Length: 380
Image (tube, rainbow, N blue to C red; front, side, top):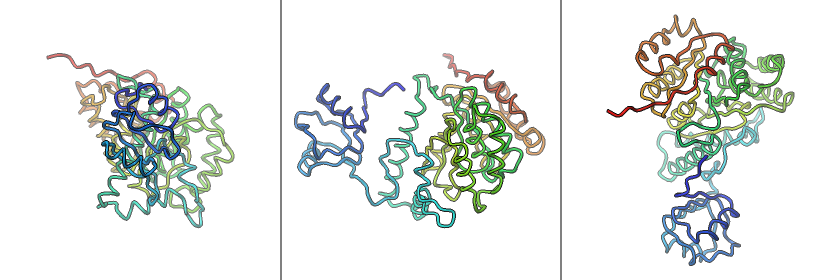
């Protein structure tokens, strides 16, 4: 990712001190989670202008001096179950620390329970901390994706959408896992909403990229002992798979505590978990410029289909992207969503980027053969 040199961001002391030695300025800089108690900096020799400190700690006299000079200092937070000033994405290990099937004391659940107290009407401070947290996730996600100036990313993301309540025994669960595995093997980064059902199937399939098909099928057999996310043992069966197959391929999950009653799936290597579901939904679709695969789902999936169609209709993110409908009978006949999207797209760039199939290999091939199409704005 090309760094924004006009607004530098630092969360490591070494790089900050090197920058100060070169520039003697912290103008337009943001510094996060650095302890300055034992520093050797002479603050009066450093330009402080539009300088923000997030969760940093100082000697009392240094803090007062910086505030007098106009620095913006957000204090370190210790009373929350989450860290607003994150510098990285989550891992499932961090979120699930403390989990036991008989007595869940995981970090994930603790954050959800705390968030639920203020879900619909948070106090001002809590709302601000949540927004700072979600911005930190945005920043970490951009670092992971490695954005290029044209809006594409080094991580070529393909998203998967579908029902959160799809059973692990459902044939679409298997089809999605098989499709995601093939797409990951083609060099794409599989992205899901991070929950159970189709979302878990996508990350599971990506996890088993470059491993034998039999290994994926064995994993699904293990998982099927607890098919629904509310079943006892749902998490422990996933842990069994990870113990048996400890090495997995990279993938991304973007869940939300707004739906925190749904457990985070354990097969994504990187997790960008948000408080705001609206930001999460928009981000999930916006980054998947190499395509989105829609498996059967309910109202949420339908909403995502038309959100993606709207982004494609207007080329909102500089590119038109493939929309693949996995479920011929469901999308073409039962719900008639595919014919409707085809009709809406007529005459638009993304019309030829629509595809309907039940075949994982054909879907993977379609994505490989249909790269994002630039939105060329012709002068009037």
